[in-house]
Image (tube, rainbow, N blue to C red):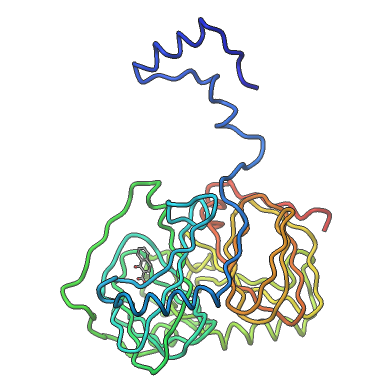
Length: 345
Ligand code: 1HN
């Protein structure tokens, strides 16, 4: 309910405005909404179109000059802000044979979800990992990272970063390295060998909130989904949905971004669901459609779409489909702000 405007009131508002004061009763209903009211809008990007633009960008600029050759996925309701949701950033990055994306580090945490190509690498804090489609790779806050591609084909991945969240908190630090490529200090597969087998070293405590595993390979992820499929325990709202977890804490793999993998078998149709965490999806296998509010989006492999906070969503698969997704759910849960509504399911 907005307060009625009178000439006396307007004169008063104008007078206090000069003193950097505002009357709460003129803005209160915009501040405290009965339900989430976001400028973020539902949207889908077809990978085929982005891929063509990326190839064009490959002719325009090197990864070295660009630092990162990325096309940002900007939410249509948040243009000009480099945001896919109110709290998160997403982009599509291309690393072509011979590229060097130089080493740097920053407060923002990053995830990569590999969409295409095979065998390009990223080096994170001295360990190189070779990436394949479907791999989920983490760059923790303040970890040095550089990317390269010594294969003969371009590699594409989805980047997800907590940039808007860090911006909101005015907590950004960043620096470049002296050398474009950091020294490889540990053998490939070292972090997975140490932490990927449900066994943890005794007597050392890392104390980091980000998972020590920084590449969750798709072969393992897919196998976990296949094993779970045989148990035949389907969630009406999600099909089969798993969260990537930090083996040291059991919490999400990243402190600020929750990451998930989801199997929707051929013919599966989900019950409606809504939650306060606006969520970015990447299809990796299969085809289907997702209804968000009143809009329906058809997707196939490598397409990307975004579901804003508190919008009803249902998915339907026409083939066995696998969806990767990420959101700020870990942050909302820790602040006791997360809410979900499973309809009647
Ligand atoms: C970044 O460091 C990467 O390392 C990708 O690949 C996207 C967007 C903004 C700021 C830093 C990367 C980024 C980024």
